[in-house]
Length: 118
Image (cartoon, rainbow, N blue to C red; front, side, top):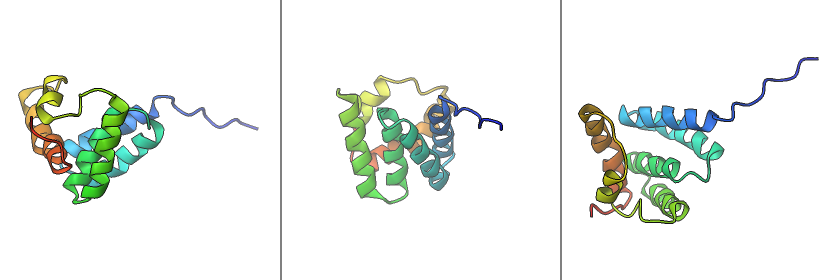
């Protein structure tokens, strides 16, 4: 009898990456599906909750967005998710084209989820 293949220990990060790409493509419903999978696999990673907060907010689910943003803040234990300005200053957001996609989706969603600008 054959043993089933071992689960990929990095699968949660793959889900997170796919969800992030879908978010940047403004494919919000798909982003939510992948980011929810990532949250299941990586429940203790604040950035997963932050991306999911943004996606929920962009889809109009503000209550769920607020809960995910609160969880990102709790897990981070610092001030990374205190404001959009602070988050932008403490991350690498890629080339100018990719930065523009983050601005139009991720940061816009975080604002809708209740994250202040400053």
